[in-house]
Image (cartoon, rainbow, N blue to C red):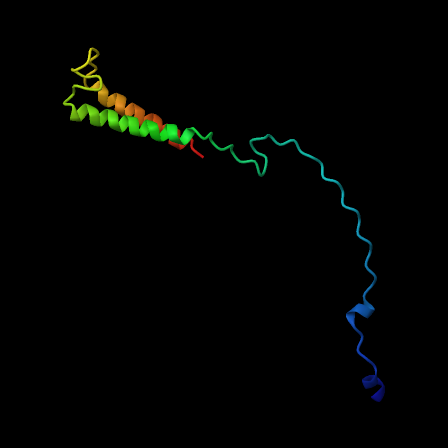
Length: 108
């Protein structure tokens, strides 16, 4: 029994087989990916004039409608002008607002 106690227990490292050398990594084949799908390439940002133009359409449409109501249908193109489009002023104002809305859906 004294012989068993005097020996050190075998460790896993001492009994493990030597590791095989790692195989060199194979070069990856390049795939042709369309630019719109490539990783890391998001949509391009809008030009600097885009946001002010969008807000300008919102404000212009709002002022068009407000001017039409405040002037009692005389302006912007009402009874007080040579071109009278009447209630078409409301459509014009909302049309300007809708252009701003469409632009806002494309804003990044």
